[in-house]
Length: 393
Ligand code: KG4
Ligand code: ZN
Image 1 (cartoon, rainbow, N blue to C red):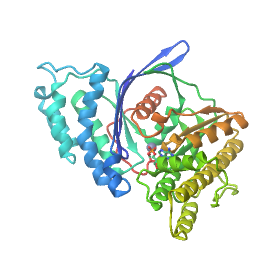
Image 2 (image 1 turned 180 degrees about the vertical axis):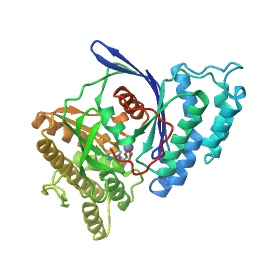
Image 3 (image 1 turned 135 degrees about the vertical axis):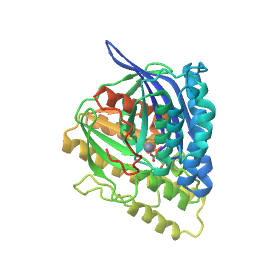
Image 4 (image 1 turned 180 degrees about the horizontal axis):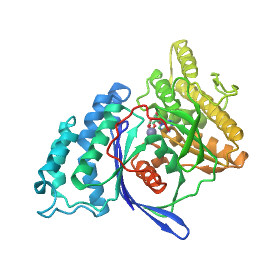
């Protein structure tokens, strides 16, 4: 089965075409084409993601990325005269209607896509939430326009489910992966710029959120602390790099001590705003914030965040008797956080599903994969859905 994934929930524009097949040893996923355009550089000057800018960038990039993805997959062929645009005015009107609010995307779409032969794609999986609504809509409407042009069914896909499922890819070679079986029940720790959640997966595609942040997401706290120290967006990787510099000095005892909010609370919720504020007060007291002090702060801040994440994840696994720990979201790109959670999984002897770093931050592979798995478990395709910024698992 061939599934096209489309991701536009935040500041990455992603298009990915996968093919899946069953073998006697399990499911194999092959990446036929995978294109990702990061808008990060465009948002840097604003110190965070600007929704209107993200929307414009997605509009500009979707058609070129889609075309590149088809070329990579060897599926870009010119259409014959009977196909595409001229054959049916109803199709033209349907596409124009769907892309009414994305005029730039419509212009590109009309110019290029009707010149192509309908690619052999069985379904389109598109992120319909959670995320920035204006950004989400661009992907959703692009999917609906493709569907109108080529009559391809759509499976609306939850971005967070993408972060969960992509952890079970087990690389065979450059483009092929096993989809590993998950032992249920499983606990998924999802940590990104917008989310910090502990999710109980009772079975395939059956989720319950058992822990959540009460204020800032952990990625948001990384980004904000970085900004307080004058480091550019996105701050997660900056904090990690500064912390590494501190470690290089063989230093282990920073002069600062930040709180580990809610680490002893019985529930599975998180709070990162107190930690962030504590860093802010510390910084305010320091007249000359040298690079050395920044490294020390980054190290202690990261340790505080890791302690809380590990402790709550452990609690969740114990409370729900989980057999597997799944981790996902952009923050899991952080090597120290990866190591700490891997260590936990060994200590308490649970299976551990960790995505490759390139698949941890937002991408369309995870969306195509989640769409495929949902179709496989019987979910229905539909054209009647909206972008929903607050969509929950
Ligand atoms: O999942 P993601 O790509 O986008 C959202 O859905 O939010 O996550 C982005 C977040 C940002 O807050 C970014 O600072 C953080 O992931 N991040 C990191 C690292 N790389 C990205 N945080 C800590 N350490 C990293 N190495
Ligand atoms: Zn994400």
